[in-house]
Image 1: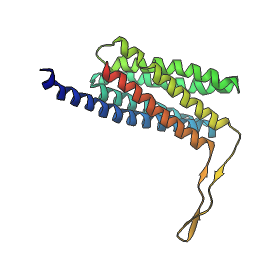
Image 2: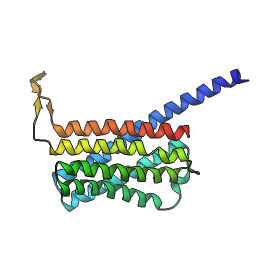
Image 3: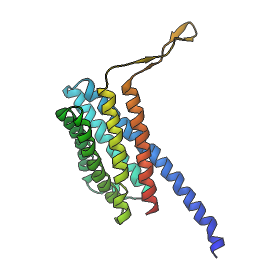
Amino acid sequence: MSVLRQPDVLGRTRRQHVLGATGALSAGAVEAVSVGVWFVLAISSRTATTALIGVAALVGGALLRARIVAAVVGSRRLRRGPRWLGLSLAVAGGWICWLLLAETVGPPAGPIVATGFLGITLAVQLTLEQSACRSRSADPDRLAAIGPGILLALGAGLLLWSAWVPGWVINSPPLPLGVATVVVRIEPLQLGLIGFGVLSICAHQRRFQRLLEA
């Protein structure tokens, strides 16, 4: 009988891996874009308009990410109640407090203190998100948000480093493109955004792996 069940087990495991990888890419991309748009606006121009756009990006990203989590775990509880808007506003508030804390304390201690604060905050928020998506909350599910929260906080630390590092630019040699020439310009903020995106995908990959195995 175990031999007959083995193909089903292998197929279910393969489907879980594919579902987890797809969900991680989607959630990580949403996280990177929403936080990246807000961060770029926050460090470039702090007007009322840019503040509203940045908060809208954070809240919209949190809501979309929650839908992805609900789809991965097969939950239909996302439609119930206004709690998702409140949780998304809390997510946006956590990111804003992180940046304000880092700027208030200042370098070199500011990024360290703010990153630690953000790691704890994100772990709590991701746990609440998972509990709201699932019909029951098992012990492994509660632990599933700790590692992702740390990885996302480390990515946020890279963003701060990219914004505060002394200005430098890497320019490629002129590349001929038809009748024109193109110069590739690499700046610290670009590297910080890429690093945050990679760590976001890794964080959600770890998160979905724990959720699907629970």
